[in-house]
Image (cartoon, rainbow over all chains, first blue to last red; front, side, top):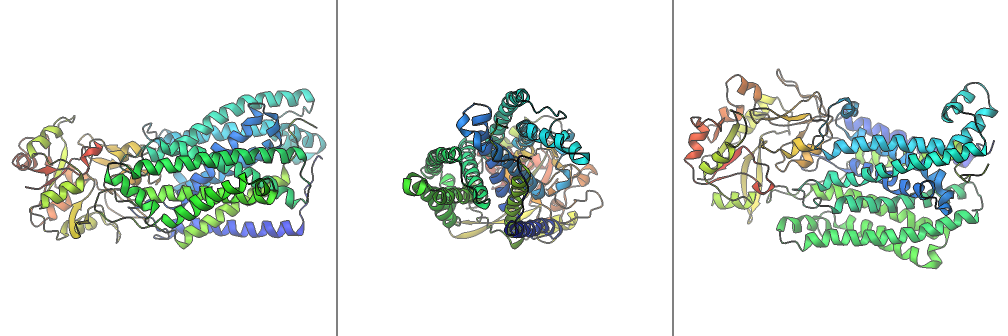
Length: 414
Length: 216
């Protein structure tokens, strides 16, 4: 076999802790549904931290990792090849976790598939989200299967019984492991991946559309929302792949190949560029509204910039999430080292998560009827536990993929 | 005073009742249910709120019909409000599964067997009329299952039986007038036609509420 599963004592402990936290997170989801009043949402702030987690994860997948994977798979930029396998696996993990969160956030989670049953309202941006995510997920998984097909076929041909059957299924039925079949897989993956990219980016922008379409929510309304959701999504995707690649190498105590290191340094420049773009988008988003001639737009900006969310905004979204990582990345002595890259990526993710939270809660807090009091929202204990648990769950599933899939193998070679 | 305050609250231009009726009459159909709250008669006693909660069997702290507190120039004012039953309801456009629908008579209603509880309608409603329900609510005619986002339906089963909504019936000062806006002989048409200043909330959004505040 090209790779082996080795679980050391430290990794086992790590996975146990992650499993425990995930279980606690899922338990909190149960409590949220079973006990009225276990969230702090109300008619003023109907959405809280759970939709923010959802937005964070789906944007990592649809905007970030999907674009990064397609650089090599669709556009043949071969230098980005070393991140393809890990990237597409994490894209599947993050979209799954994101959709799990939004299903759990529904008041009636068991009805999540109703839009597929013909209960359809085409004027709702959310309906298009549901469809786009579904199509995106299917094309993403097929792309991934094509990329991993030869590896699965190899395992199937070397094993017997149920395992053989399972891997044969994953290998799309064929046991062909020739070079020719691998080339054909990649050609197909380019086509399927292109559809995944287009649909993914549409889904990514459409998430912003859900918010931007509401005229009376002064902080949300306008075309900035889809743009900002996409660009911060790309930044978060780059940060996730840098983080995962470095941690995977460290955990295996494996020297990083020069090719992989080169990609990370390329990603460093890309990430710096995207942080700069996001700084511009955030600034103009708020500046336009702060200097607006209508008072309710100004009032909406005020809740974020110097109101109830100002601490989170300035410290997490702006300073820690954008300014500090940008400085880290452009100073070569920090940005070109692995710890520097790791720290910058972690900070970017913190910032993007803060951005999602502030965007959603901050859009809901200002009064919709001028003169009525501001909404109040702080995540409840159960919502906080859920947040921790979901991030642990995402990490846990990612680690399982690291163990079961050849994520560090180059795309084309045996 | 009241006129100035509601006008500043709603950001709306005050029109005459006749103009409001004329606008409403452009809607399709022969029946368009509407509500007028006469703020010159309303003393904010809260009986309508209790009547609504009682009739809909709502849990404590959950209101379809509520009295909002509004602070203007340091003074607290109150404003009774519920679903405005807009002609162009943002919540209906937002609902992904078409659980929110509009009846032929203008009532914006929800099919609670379809609602998935995404709460997009609550985010989309400019009048805070959509209420996430966190526990099962029993009711002889329309029980709400836990998790859906409910709202005022103008007591549709009472209207269908020829009665008035519970809040209208309960108001001790007859400050609430309910009726068919398209029928020139209805009480609401008579009352509105005689009023010089009538306002709807946030008219600049183009939602065209069928809920009017009479200022005088």
